[in-house]
Image (cartoon, rainbow over all chains, first blue to last red; front, side):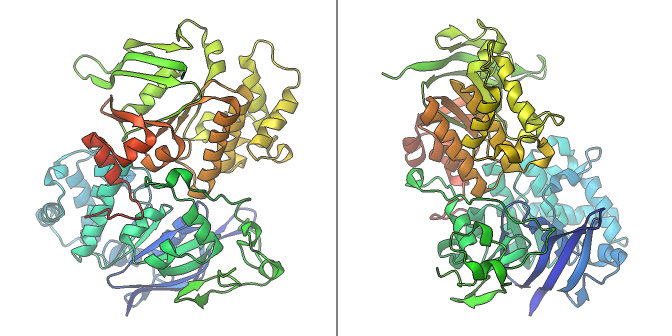
Length: 324
Length: 258
């Protein structure tokens, strides 16, 4: 049984002059207990919009268009926003946005921040209970409980981000949606944050994670499944090994070939760069969205709409199944 | 014989008052040779950017000396100095004047010259071509109308116009995607090939440093803790801190989180 099930989700930005930007345009996936799904793609491909949408959040000008998001018997696209905040967010699903650390209130200590938040979700808990819970959780996660008595300004960026991750999972949500939680951090702090997320997952505090990033090497170390996103759609979904070591879709291949890691031989690696830019998502797009930049595109690719196809045990959105 | 282009001796920069003193750059010494690419690598707060700002004369050192082409860097007027020493920053969005079009930004760079060439516009065209941008497409556009990759390329087009002897590239690719990143790195490498410019590449990404540079300086808490040929520093690091830094970068062949 899937914990989270997304079916043909479409969420669009509505511009003032009546245009629609199709940021998430027909995305489907399932998330099972014990799974970390990595979603990768370049800026503007819709991955952050997807993260927000999957969490049931549609801040204007973002609008829900069609499709469903099933989580524990609820459809998050239909649920009342008040109910979403009280019963789902933080309890069943936690959304950790890119700049999460800026959510900390600079004028109050971390412990006051935690009490504020948890009181909102659980009015029945007393202050003492909340602080006790926070203290125990911090101790179990190799985070110093001293942090609770500090102000955000006393913490480093990495420490702030880890604090936010710990706080947002205090109510043991089943699903965590982490949207580039490490993009503003240097490599060492990045590793600490990812270790914490992995720890939460391994200790079964959270049952499954959607991890969004543009850094594929990170996904190699934490994800079991990876989805590559391009221009509002998934173009390839497979296991970590399939996508990292044997990508089929020409875009996934280009992404993999642009990775630079400090390993022998990288100096002589031919990095791939793609001509052109992703398509304008305001336009109705016919055919394969990657065709304009694809080295193998033919007339069929440019004209005929293309669905995900099963190839070599994974899903690929390519007329030639990536074999060309 | 390698020719020294830039030299820093006992360079120090402190911030704050006596009670709350931070030593951002702590007595560092280094040379940059002509035509060489050196990466300055370290965590946030290690002093990389402070060093860059001092080289660029945007910040006065608290102590020490710096020489450019054998002469104290303070000896020349700033305008003259900047003709030869230029920079590309992390976020081109904040380095551009929002009210200036691409064309104006590029034409304005000629102000650094006393007798600019009369063919300014033709040179701008050429510089844009060198970074794979079409003049017709971007010349009249304002920064907000350009994509991140385009803005960074306009920044490099500016460098092509000025042809500096020394370029400071402060995290020039940390805001752009990996696919665009390779084309930006290519442009920087071309600059070295064509103009024999020296480049100081500042990054916290060791993979990038390894890829682009001849030598790597590792900075930690204001000091250069290790330096050497890029290949040697990455494959056979000596300093404990360097080793940790390398272990912190996720790669594709080894275990990362244990």
